[in-house]
Every structure is written in structure tokens, then in C-alpha cells.
Image (cartoon, rainbow, N blue to C red; front, side, top):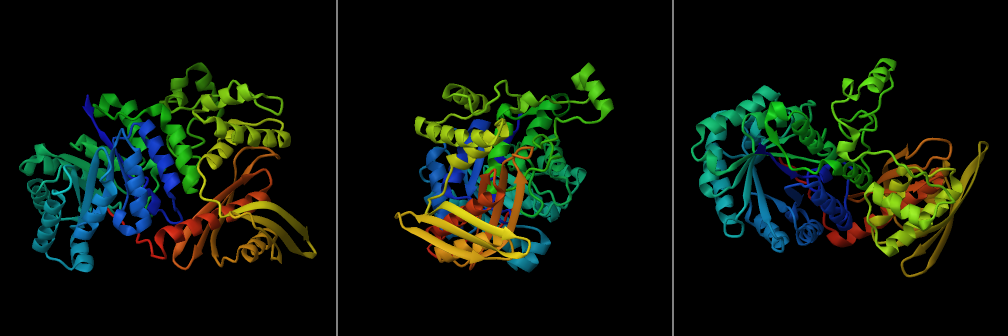
Length: 516
């Protein structure tokens, strides 16, 4: 059966989602999970964007052993040099070059003729050939490019030395029949097309990213690009888990298959959601909370008689299974370790001790600790940014006829204790004003959201914040059974990320230039 390669760009295009900022430790955590997921190629970032991006791509390149590590570059010498520097330690590096090809981009962005675009792209591919044996070229906005010119661009890329030509529907404009026809035409008309792989990169502006990617597969695409949970610019990208499960479930139709480790899908989805702060909608295909839930009486009756009446996939396939261990405050370390193994976590002894202590604290507050509770504090604690500030205590005074007041105690990395008190127009505002006074940081809070990790009156709450300082944007998260404590922890977490990013970039602005 024909193999379809999976190219994951969660760490690059996914990070370009508004409000998402991953530090190097978080990128490494996701990269290792993508390896377990069986991803063939992972795009680690855009090295020329900033010193911090280059360092992060280099860290991923050194760490990943079982997948091709890809770096994005514009068709410029300095971008290619930066990508080489970032990827030089990778076991299997690949350069991803792009240059826009559509009339609207040529006229308004590049201010180039067709001939100039071809010359610039050809020169970049040939220059990259000095450093890389694997080169992917993307004519940006290929979906709105004249088909005859796209054939010329593809033929040029093949002759110049590209090993993969990616066809991006950059603005999610096409419908499946149109997008599939592009691949069919390229396969039929471009000389030497059999020497390379064709790739599909789709955006979801009109809700057709997965359908377009599968249409490309039906018409000869060898590779599909996308992200976990479909995150990315604007409405996002093709969700790779949807493509993999479509190929698996409908092998009879597609006659093609990926090598994704399907049982790692649920864990990958949770991890990306946690670290990016992007909540997976309940009705999201494959990984949404309701994807395998049935409420209708007719559906429930059918499920009880025969599961396949209303389920075309089983939750076990993507790594979901009900727990047989009910954990509470009387549970011991052995039961807790077995639960972690059952949930797919392998911790060091030191990490286990921290997690078990956190579990015991939570068990004292809740009658029963659910799988979701455990995932929340494990995934919060495993990957942390450098703690310049650590929240020690908060005190809030509030009444409906009094001005809310908050007092915080924060410990610095050097051991200094900072205490401040402030008022606000609400409890959370008072807490954040007190933290600002204690840390001396001036920031703008641009987003604040709360969600319940579990159900019931004693549920854990997760708070996600996005803040700005000058042109630096970061996010932070906090989890607690007390929503005010979670709010404070999220704010301090974001401040720590802000300081880390400010130091990494040395004051430079991160240039998030999109593809493709």
C-alpha cells in the first residue's frame, strides 16, 4: 500500500497562531512526542527570524534521532545560511525554501515578473544545494497561481535540485476538486516529476483543509503537511491526526497509509493543547472531548447493541482508554506510578517525587483524582520555563461593597522575597496589580481565559493568559482548584516566559513571516 509521508509543522506554522509562544524546552517536549507519534518530517522553526528561533531549531536538531528535521527559509542567502547553522547537527536535515508565485503576490508583495521569480527561486535552490542534500521548495500561494506557470516553477525546482515540491493552498481558497486537479496536472505534464515527491500544505480558512489534503493524496501527493490539532495561522492548518485516521479508516478507498503511531494521537493532542494554551473544541474530529461521546437515546441503543452502528473508529485506536484505578488520598506511590504508566508518562525518580507530592496535595482537596486532573499537573510540571519569579502566597480581600484588595509574596531566583499589596476593579485585577508592583514589570494583558480541567464543584481550573511588553508577546498558564491561585500562577508563568524571551532575543523583534 502506498506510503504517505507526514510533515508536521506544529513547531513552526503552529507557533504562528496568535498568542502562542513556545520556549525551547517546550519545543523539545513536543518534538520528542512527535517522534513517538511516528512523524516522518518535522519543521522545527524559522531560524532567520531571531537568535532565539535559531537556537530552538538547533536544540531540536540535536535531540531528534528518528525523523527528518526541517528549517524554513526565504529564498535569500542569509536565511539559508541561518538554516544551515541551525540544522548542521541534525542526523537528517532538510531545508524548506519558499517564494511566492501567484499573480497577487508577485505584483503586490514581491514586485517581480514571472521570469524574476523563477530566477530568484532557482538561484536559492542551487545555493542551498551546497549545504543540503534534501531541499523542499514551496511556491507560496500555489493555489492561486496560474496552472501553466506552476508547472514551469515545478520543472525549474526539479532541475535546480529540489527533492520535494510542496503545493500550498496558503489562504485556504480552493475546494477539493480544484486542489486535486493541480496534482493531477503536475503529475501528467511536468518532465522529471517522478524524481521528486509532491507535498500538500493546506489552510482551513473555508473549513476544507483536510478534504483538500486528501484530494491531493488521491491525485498523487506523496506527503501531507499539517499540525497537531490543526493549529496555525488564521483558521489553522490541516490536522494531521484527521488525515492519518482517514487513511486508516478508509484504506479501501484511498489505498494509501501513513506510518503514524495512532495510539499516540490523544497524548500528542493533549500536550500541544497544554503547551500552546489553545483549547481543543469538544466537537473537534478525532481528538475532541465529544468525538467518542453519545447522548442521543437512539444512538445509545445502537451502541449497546453494536458499536459500529455509530462509531467508525474506536477510542482505543487513538490511545484513549478508561482507567481501572480510582485514585484518592489513600492511594500509595505504587498505584500512582502504575497510573502514570497507564496514561503514557515515564518520569524520572525526581519527577515522580514532585508529581506524587502534587498528587497528595490535590487528593486532600478532592474526593477523587481523575485522569484529567493527573494530566493537568503532570504536563504543567514536566516542562517549565526558568523561574525568575516564584509565587509563594496570595491573600485576597473582597466584598460586593468594598474595593477588592490583594497581597502577594513572590520569591526571586536569587532568594529575595518581594511583598506588595494593591487594589483592583476585581479580585484578579487586584492580584495582577500587586504582582506588577512586586516584580516591577510593565505589561499589557491582552487575553485571559478560564476552563475547567475536570467536572464538579471541586474541579481544577486552568487559566491561560496572553501578555505583551513592547512588541514581545507571551502566554502563561496555571492550574489549581482555586481559580484565583490559578490566575496568579498563570500571570507569574507568563512573566517568567517574557523575561526568558527578552533575554533570548536580546531585545530583537521576532519576525513571524508566514508561509506557505
